[in-house]
Image 1 (tube, one colour):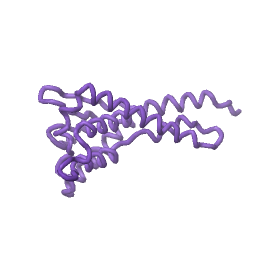
Image 2 (cartoon, rainbow, N blue to C red):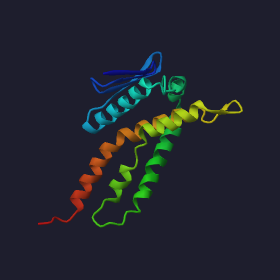
Image 3 (cartoon, one colour):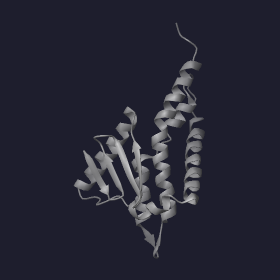
Length: 173
C-alpha cells in the first residue's frame, strides 16, 4: 500500500519508507527498519488513509512549509525544541516512585509526539488571526522535525534504557 498524502509526502507501506520531498530536487527517504518503527509508519498511513477516505482532510499541510525545513536557523530551532521535548519528559520520569522501575525508561516512553503533534501543528498552521498565521511556516517546520525525530529515536532509546536497567537490577534466583 502506497499512500499519497500530498506531492510533498509519500508513505510506502510495502517497503516501509517515508518519502519527504523537501524541494523539487531534494528528497529525504526514511527507512523504517525495525518492527516498532514499521508499526509507527503503518499507524500513520492508516490514520491518513482513513481521514482522507472520510473526507476529513484532503492533504497534510506540509508542502507549503517544506522549503523552510532546510534552513540552518530552523534546523537549529528544531534541534533545540527536540532537546527541550526530551529533557522535559525525562523530568516527568523523575516522578516515578516504584522500586525497580526505570525512571529513564518511563521518561523515554513519553518522548514521542507522533501524529497528535502533527495534527495540532497542522491545525495551528492553517488558522490565522487578523490575517496572521497562529503558527508561522518556520515554527511549523521545526515542530514537524521535532515530531519526526522524537518518534523515530524513541524505540532505540527505549531498548538501550531497558537493557541498561535490566543489567542494573540485582539478579533474582
